[in-house]
Image (cartoon, rainbow, N blue to C red; front, side, top):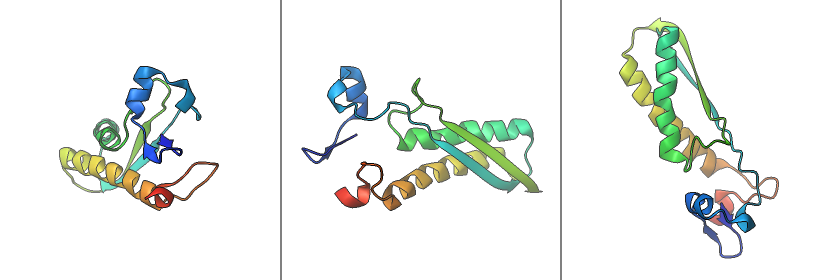
Length: 121
């Protein structure tokens, strides 16, 4: 949450803890949906594990994440072209998810009354 008056970011976790209603100007429901697409040969269970590991990317970049109001979801798709280590694919997926969130923040523009990083940096 960005405090326009004081021109600072507020600690969202602290706001939840204190339940400050005056800063709750937007819906607490924030869903992040991502897709991990790989050319690895993976089973349905492997894709599920990759999605699970990729959620670490959310945790590295979004705070708080996975609250009761969120629908955070990651889908994994695999074309099955090459053999790959599931652990490595999962590690790289988490890293990529985290980086994609940062890229989205840095490239976003003001919209719907919300101020973007570009405007406040």
